[in-house]
Image (cartoon, rainbow, N blue to C red):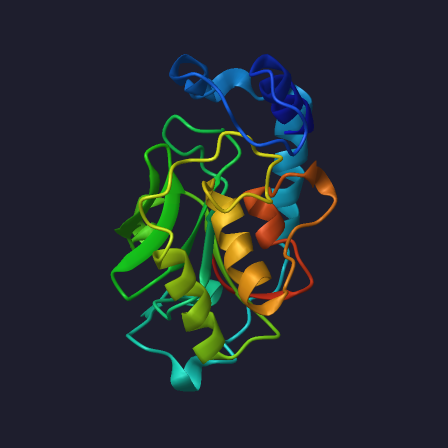
Length: 217
């Protein structure tokens, strides 16, 4: 993904972490096969690592809202507001390294897609071939709900095609939105050094600050 993002940034004429200011023609989504073999291997390694993580019972389950669907030894699919969902599945016509969202209700998630920040269906247990659900260790269920509410408040903002510009709050990409929800509200930085300044979806799973609640692989 490092090579992919670097090529994308250079190709679009962006400076690292600089605000996006491009004509509409430059906003074309990268092709799904644009990810290099090296980046694909790195992403696969992150997925393999995530598949070895232990699944925990939701420590905030006593105040969980909604029902959960039991899924054998992989945990229970969550519906609690503020739980983070991540998939390594290539998402539509966006970057081929996966997608992330934050649960808003038992039926709804908040996510950033090519059309901007929107709500989607909380049905990742049936629509994704691989997926993970995590919760931040340092927050309460009420704080998780606040993070989800903050993300919900960003609806209508456009997609952020400059993946290195995590400082902007005028536009978002998927994992950028989830990351900002916890960074801005509670100072919890779920980004790592794995992909420079960009936030890779799988970094939200491979992170010592979260607990894995559910996995489909």
